[in-house]
Length: 194
Image (cartoon, rainbow, N blue to C red; front, side, top):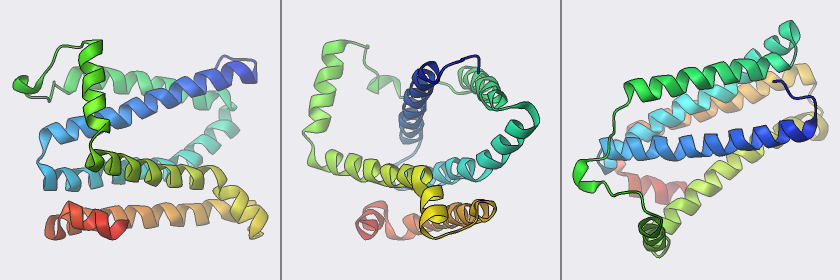
């Protein structure tokens, strides 16, 4: 919010991206610690539902902030929101990993755990399916406006509505997934989705 150059903005946004990626991993770890396999899939559907609402609401809020207070206000609001969330996390969320599963933080132990994880074909398959899923979503978020406006000739004032329809469809599908995974099972849903 205080930068005067694109380089500094790029560096700070990159750091924000790493923080967002860490948050995504931590959320999954906390949910995994709290639920068994089938309930985990249902809980993650709810988490995805909440996360999916952000791209629906954020452009509207950001647009109004930029018009009323200038583009820097978007980053001030993000910074304030981040501080509030961090404080709430430290204040309200206890350690979820059971004491018998905890390990001291050691570089060598962490490397061994990563090696064991990466040698599992099931774990690699799940990681890749998640990576491709998120890559597709972020590719859409990044290029959607260009595809709609430049390729299909949609007017810029109509784009927000079409973009919103896509997000609403994602919300509906994650809600359906949360119900189906309880009946069909997470592995069957994953195979069907792939």
